[in-house]
Length: 206
Image (cartoon, rainbow, N blue to C red; front, side):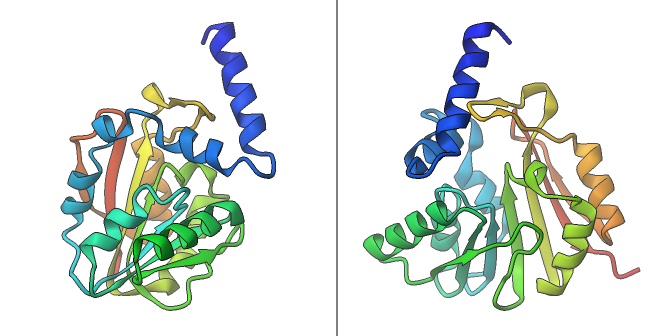
C-alpha cells in the first residue's frame, strides 16, 4: 500500500471513530460503487427468505442490507444489530422516515447480539473480523436461532480486503473453522462475489 493510501486509511479511520462522524462511517462501509461489486439484491435473493421470516442483520452499520432484507420479509421483521449507537440511531430514523415498520434496532454488546427473540436468519456482512473469539460468539448465538435457523456470512477475502477503514478480511477456511467449532455445518457456499466469500451455515444437529 502506498504512503498516500496509508494516510487516507488512517485519516478516515480516525474521523470515523470520533463522535459525530456517523456519515463518514456509512460512506466508508458503503463506498460509491458498492452496488456494482456487492450485488446486494442477488445476495438477498440467494437467501430464499420467507415473507414472514425474522432476520437479524448483525453489524448493520448504516443499513446497507437492512432495508433490502426488510423488503424481502414484508410480513416479518429485521433486527438491525450494531454496537455503535450512531448507526442504530441512523437506521431507526431512516426506518421511520421511509415507513419501514418491520425494522427494529438493537444495541448490541461487544460479545452479545442481545436479540429480543429467536430469529430464522442471522445475516452479517463485513463484520465477522470485528467479532471477538468468533467460535464462542457464534456458539452463544445458537440460542437466538429458531429450529432450522441459518447464519449467512459475507466477508471480505484477504486478497482483496482493502477498504477505507483498513484491511478487514477473513479467509473462507477461517470462517468455516470457527463456525464448525461453534457447532454449525456449512450449508451453502456462493461464489458469485469477486471480493468476498458468501457462506451459509446451519446448526449441526449431529
